[in-house]
Length: 131
Image (cartoon, rainbow, N blue to C red; front, side, top):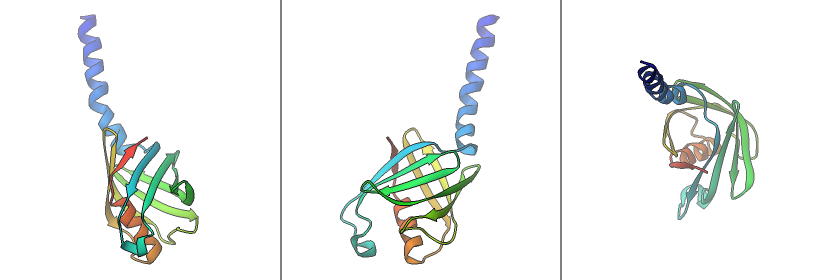
């Protein structure tokens, strides 16, 4: 009986883990590399790293700070609110995210199409890998 209780507890924990990720928060660093892009005058080419910590994010482009801000996550929807950085967007961007193993993807729900916001949309269209 004790083994059955432990097994059921383990199964319950594993079953709830994906829901916790989907409705909780993102944490850690995720990287994508863009090569050969002519979008925005080639300005998107490079190694992009998203670093999520406690409702905040920092973005680097080739190791240089690009933008930082705050996130709000509800379910599998994340809202980015850029606060600082030369590549920041003045309006929030809302995306659906999916974390599958080490792979993180975003799908745009709503975001501005101004040049800085378009950059955010184009970079987030890539697949990121946890590092």
